[in-house]
Every structure is written in C-alpha cells, then in structure tokens.
Length: 178
Ligand code: PNS
Image (cartoon, rainbow, N blue to C red; front, side, top):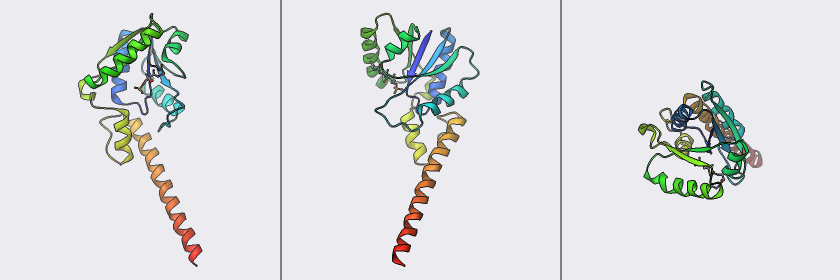
C-alpha cells in the first residue's frame, strides 16, 4: 500500500493523472492531505477531502485521508510501504530528492516512488491555479470541472462579499454625511 501525501489546494489534473498512474501500480493508494496549521489554505482540509473523494470515486483501490505531523509517522501508522510523489520538471527534483532522503533517514523501510505526470500537465501547479482563478482567468485546462466550479464559487463569493463591504462602507459614509 502507498500513500500520496500533499496539500492538494486545490487538486489539479496533474494530481489526478498521478493518482490514476499510482492506482495502477499499487494494490491500494491513500491520498493523504496534510493538515498544516502554519498555512492558511484556500480550501479547508474537509473541502479538499470531499473534492478528491468525488474525483476518485471511480477507483476501487483509492481512498482519501487527512493527517497531521510527519509523513513518515502517518505512513507507519497506516502500514504503507511507499510514498508516491510526482516530479514534473528538474526544478521539482532537488526538493523532492531532499524530502525523499530525509524521509528515508527518518524511516529507512519506507520507499519513495516518483512518477511523472503526463507531460501536458508538467506546468500545472496548485499555486498557479489559485493565482489565475483569483484574478478571474481560465483554469478549465488545469483542473477538473468540479474544481473549476468550486474555484469560481469561492472567488465569486469573495468578490461579492468585497462588493457588499464596499457598498455598506459607502452607505455608512453617506449616513455620516447626512
Ligand atoms: O503538495 P505539497 O505541498 O508539495 O506536499 C508536501 C508534503 C505535504 C508532502 C510535505 O510538506 C510533507 O511531507 N509534510 C509533512 C511534514 C513532514 O513530514 N515534513 C518532513 C518532510 S522531509
């Protein structure tokens, strides 16, 4: 059994491509979402879990979980023998190598397995997706339709609440002036 740990904020087509590949080589694959108290995510861990569950419901050997703390501790707890990670480009390699070797130091029996997503997803990252979606750009080629809708709902709601705040501020000023 392998775990595929990450932030998945939001899950992209690159992540799903890797899940598909991982599900074909491991008997069981657990997508493990890190609960990171140091970061303010765009989507809550619960939202991300639900989205990935919906997107992977077609795979019998894939499930989704969340974890806190060290990846190696979580892997040991769920008796995983491997950690799956994706490498898109050389730029990912240095960080991924460092993390894999550190995880090996912490837990020598746990193997890291790297897989390459389809090359047409090699430029896709959650960070860029967040940035493009926040500015109203098109993300349909980068994330599944479900995620595109959720992003639109999130940023549409953010825009609406900003507009509401601005209009109530204008109202407050008008009231002060009258
Ligand atoms: O999707 P990401 O943000 O690239 O995933 C990074 C993740 C979650 C795999 C990594 O930050 C991680 O394993 N965090 C858990 C804490 C931990 O084990 N840190 C030591 C790593 S050597």
